[in-house]
Image (cartoon, rainbow, N blue to C red; front, side, top):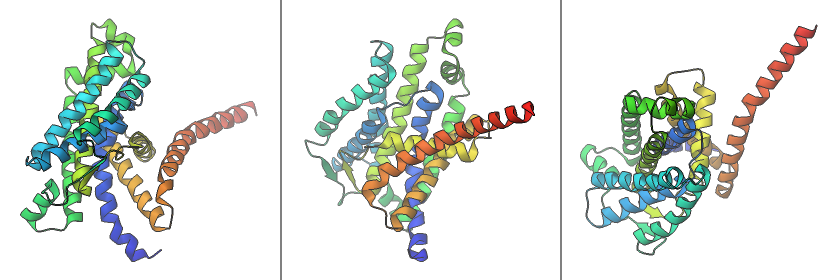
Length: 305
C-alpha cells in the first residue's frame, strides 16, 4: 500500500463520509429517538437520488432538485409512518413493506432503467466548481461540511421546540408522554417523515456526486447508518448533549468511510464491504455489553473478597 496514494484518497473519503453522514443523522432520528431501525432507508435513499437525477435531466436547477429529493424521501417516510400508526403494522415490518414498494416506484421514476447517468448535466458540485474554481474533492468536502452543519443546527433547534421535545419523549417513555395528552402517533409520523427526508437529501447528494442514480445505490444503507451511529457513540458517547449525539452520527460516518478507504487500498475486495460493515456494527454493539459484564463480575469478585 502506497502511503501517498492513501493520503490522496482521504479527501474523497471524508467528503463521502460527510454526505452519507446526513443519511446517518436520519437513521439516528428513528434509531436513537424512536428506538428502532427504519428499514425504509435502503430504498428511500435511492428515491432521493432517482428524483434528483430525473429532475436535473429535465432541466431543473440542481439545488431545486435537492428539495424535490427531500420531499420524495419525506413522502416515503410518511407512508411507513401511516402503515405503522394508522394501520397498526409493526414498525420493522412497515419499513420492510415500504422498502419493497419503493423498488418498483424507483424503477418507474427512472423510466424503467436501473441506471440514470448525469454525465453531460450540471450538478450542485459542478456549479460550485464553476463559481469557485476549486477541484471536485474540495467542492464535495466543503458542500458536505456546509450541509451537515446546517442540518445539525436545524435539528438541534427543532428538537428543542415543543413538538421536537415531544418526539424525543416519545422514544424515552411513550406511555408517560401519552398520559400528558400528546398524540404519539403524530410524533412518530413526523419523526419518520423528517428522517427519510434527510435520507432523500443524502441520496440526491450521493447521486450528484457520483454523476448517476442507480437502483441499488441504497442497498445496505441502514447498515452503514447504524455503523456510523455506533462508531460515533464509541468515540463521543460521554458527551450528553443532543447536538453532540447528532454530530457523532456524522463523525462516525466519516470514520467509517476513512476505514473503508484504507481497507480498499490494502487490497480488500469491494464486494466484502457489506460484510465489513456488519462486523463493525456487531463488534461495536457487543463490546460495551462485554465490558459492562466484565466490570460487574470484577466488582462482585472484589466485594466477595
